[in-house]
Image (cartoon, rainbow, N blue to C red; front, side, top):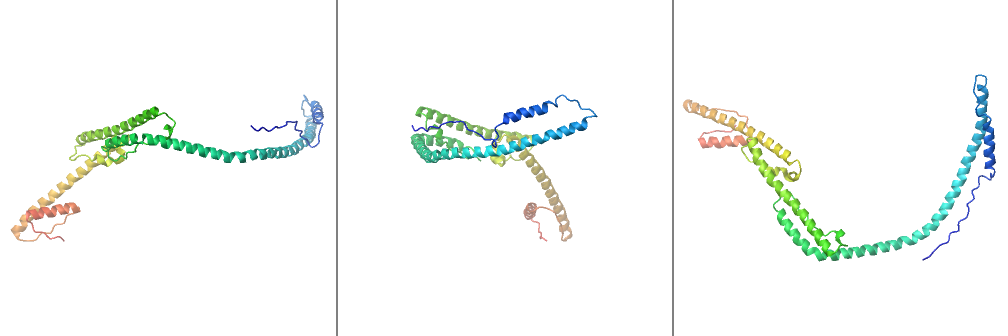
Length: 291
């Protein structure tokens, strides 16, 4: 294995050629110590403000020195890091294509193993899917998703794969059976709702479509029953209206036969009701003319 020796030495950082920082620090301490513990009063407040102004001058000098030093140090640091990164990039440039080849080879090997294992169990999977699909034929608005060989099974032993396959089949079978039970529950619930809402016709539960497998199917079925109830009541009222029209026509027709006159009647009815009235008139042998 190739090794590279890196000699580590002390990195000297120049602070703008200033070499007496410790001396400057001690001098600063001496300057400020004489102001420690002083009490401010009316007779010396002006003097204190002058002292503060005087102390700000060396502090600003130190601040400027720090800023300049920081720029120099950061520039040198960035330059040194770039030199190191350039060396690192030499290895990265060599590693990347090698890693790509290794990844391609590994993936190809995994894919071959997956295909071999899949082919070994495909007949059993197809047979299981036929069984499940046959059960699923009892359902409507349900698309059966066939079982497939999972890539996660590729590295498992045949015994473990068989166990996983059986477990997956059981899960799918139970899901389908629960949906079949849901259909039975829906049909039973429709009979109960028909009685509760006093409906004349059966509830068309197929209106639920895919939603019949959702949790709120009962609420949706009650909505359908409620709408059907309103429709049936409206139909009864309309039928009563048509009967009244028919009775009126019979009465008027008798008067016509007696007086040998013509009668003109106007009705505000739907197209379907008009067709029903037309058939009724013809069955009664009543001559009419549409205006």
